Amino acid sequence: MAPTEGDVIPDVEAPLCDGETFRSTALSDALGPRGGVLVCTGFAFSAIAQNWWTRLVAAGWAEFDDVSVLGVSRDGPYAQNEFLRWLGSPDLQFVADVDGVVSDVLELRTSRDGMANVSTPWRAAFVLDSDRRVQYAFVADDWISPLPRDEIEAAIDSLS
Image: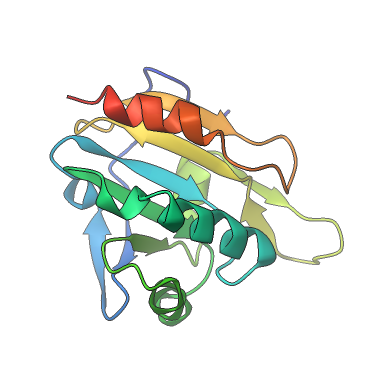
């Protein structure tokens, strides 16, 4: 079952991409001083990822004070970096969850009809404090619904 409010996310390590480089990084090191937001989308450049992330950039999500915004996608680091450059938002970072380790830790990975031998995470968002404790959790029950931005932003505002 995916993490819920109050759960602590394990300190999983994966390649963290910044639009130019990537480096294996523990989640605890990727979070800002106040915490972070994990936003799980299937694949970079998918229609949903493009839709969600262009809206998040337009809403100023790259500008939260001391709160990291981390995308999680199954693409490799080169595709992640290209997607970040395409977004044109240098303050965002993406986790290259190529092997699905992060998706497995979050218990989000599922098989997709029509995509033989491919699994992706359910679309989800988690607001974490600096100790990786979940302050807000959203897991979509379909593949296309938008994020509940107002609820997520309220949870971010409440981080100390």
